[in-house]
Image 1 (cartoon, rainbow over the protein chains, first blue to last red):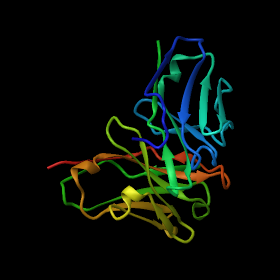
Image 2 (tube, chains in turn green, cyan):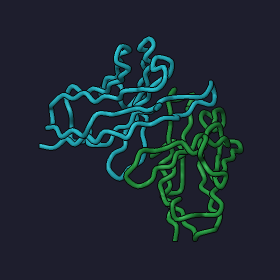
Image 3 (cartoon, rainbow over the protein chains, first blue to last red):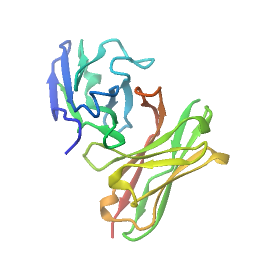
Image 4 (tube, one colour):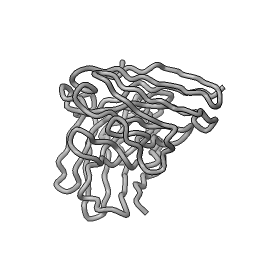
Length: 110
Length: 121
């Protein structure tokens, strides 16, 4: 049972817009910035979003992040086949005094 | 090139000990915390702990406290994850990752490729 709750799966067709949610609490998302990581099949996770809505260099602007209260979201517009991957949200938890990850969302491009 | 290079896959028996490594290059290794993340087969990411190579200050996630040891060698820019007695349940891929950002906005910006550890009799 992960501290951060994500839907286990999401899907969309090429060109569509997909949103992945991440729900937490006042000790994690409610207080600290949220990060998102993309894990392509068979590879290491890579940073996709940091400080709620900042994209690392090289990440297309099709990806956007937002946060409100104790929930965060990752939106992917103009969905492409190469976006098929697992997506994880993460943040610091002040009560646990450690990093916490969501359970991950497997995105399928139909 | 800024990178974290991890040691190769390991196959071990229950009860054996193991060290895996993560060597940083292309940046000042002692200035960034290095975290370790476990991914069990077909499962999600779990934070295990983190070390500051500059002074070896180390923090552990509660489930991993006492189960593993995290260390670092400044002279070789290498972080280590160690088990004294492996269990079958330690079978997983282990990633090291560099923490970047600022207070309230930390994130892992650089990841190693992972080390697959298989524990089987």
